[in-house]
Length: 538
Image (cartoon, rainbow, N blue to C red; front, side, top):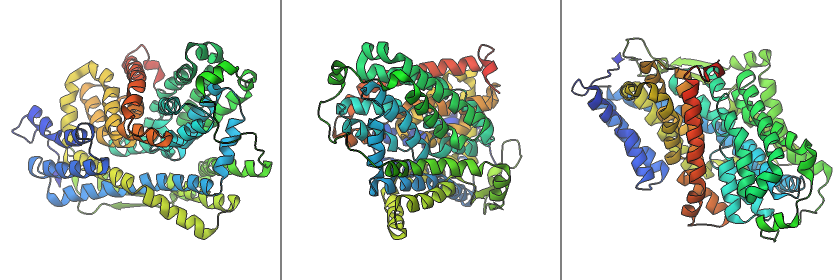
């Protein structure tokens, strides 16, 4: 058995923490300074983590490699298994042109560009984040807004800022599932606390969006629809994450938010010509007056309806127990690790949920979707293969970062850093969201930031006497605000709207919003760690 040591380097906690931080520093420097591609930075960071774990922290090489292999498997299944199948469903709707019908349907909701921004960038973007994540909402929503006539820069900025509140529960809850896995905390406990932080962002982001679209006039004239949309979204996200399922939190929030917005009488009122002229380019790439058969409109909405239905059925207790029977639990080969207290760690045993995992449920919904929208089996299979090819670098990035995280966690590197960071004491609650924000800003993924820093946050919380669930959740909640300034997301946005090379322009426009909302989240987490807002926690 390998027993983790907190001070393996010269019997010094400070020096050991400095050495333990080398893999993280390597990844962050390669991404943020050298601007290396994420998959290459992840592989180099993994190599550094192995070198630190083996000679410096004394973890046997076989166990070190085994820890990394477990991280790779978790990255493939269930993490990328969810992403591949969710993006596959979207690709099939594009192939059959049902996505175009869906876009036209959204365009008819209101002629007011401020309302269109709320429906498409905030609500539909949240649905895309729930199903796929990893840049898909920014790319798709930016294109849709430009197709409706938005100025390309404004479309990109609105899509980037909107892609915040739903991120923690994106890709069928992938970030919080990863956070629970790497920290050893129950998923329900982590999701419950995140669901009492990110809904606060949902209250203000719609107001920011209408301001971005039309300035003070937009805020003055459409604050009511924005507020109604934000409140409905926040309430649904809170309720689903706390009482239903983390995987369904964003789907419920997106649908309820859109429903509340559409049901509001004033939201469907045509916009004044000066408003449209100030926001739009005046040239539409498609005639939105084209009538689509009702049957085809229903088929366009079918994929997302089916996913909601499948996930809802999977939560019924008898069905849930039946799916759980397919879960495989086994001892992980060549891994026998104990924590600093001498107790075996949970990673010695690996759990493989074959049927109950989100990716399998999305695959099932996708198979039904293919039949509903008229995609033949051969074409559906080719689209699935094309999806894997499209995500090949994302797969490599996620698996390498998770392998790095597992090596750091199981070798004791994360625990050493956590004990060192715990010296911040009460100030740790304020700094906790900043760490998640920084991780997402450089990696582009809340999932990767949770894998990197989740265990560190929990370790530091336990050393300082704070709630481990609170700081773990703060890592994810703060991380969502780094999404809009990550180089990957900026590049995706620019490429989608034809602004290649203007990432710096977008960064200057979204950075103040990212920092301002981060400050708000830091204050919220600090207050939740005290009696001021401590009542908010379960």
